[in-house]
Image (cartoon, rainbow, N blue to C red):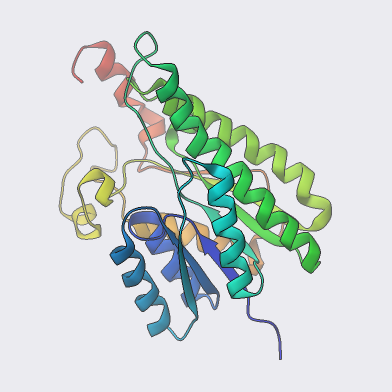
Length: 260
């Protein structure tokens, strides 16, 4: 019998991570779930995965100390027996503009968003190389991988750095048939934004050309495709899913006008 593939999705206790975990389970993956503070959310994700007939294991993973977080990931991979796809979804933000950002806050954002993704990706990729069957790594960045978020200099810089890391990883890992891509969401209806999926279809968002926030499943479906057989000619790319936000870039103009 063919080996069941395994995907680990960091911060899959809610939002984009949860939707991605469930969609990958629908695609036939067993799922590794990580959470930092919302254990109940992680349990709900695990239950949803198991209802689809797939295995789910979970572990607490805090990337404020990436090396300790890496040990948690190693234990999760050991529990599941292998890893074929890693979704680096965990991230954080400290809102502060360039002249105001404290160095410790700058480092906090980079530690989680960049260092954490580096450590997790190295652990996953080394295991994939040992397995000798290739694999997929998906970095969840942001539209702010491509355009600044006013008032969030560390987040903007970290997401740009993660975009660059994605490209470097893609070239480095291609000889091992490990494909690396980024997904760059715009405004999505997540708990971090005080919304749920239903809000994506009922709350207006006038500054986005699509007129609404995105549904987490609109991001997860790209993650699922990038982990599917038909994305096998795709690596080093960043897929923007933002309802047209990047075309208009309204936040910068609004910030300049003092509207936000």
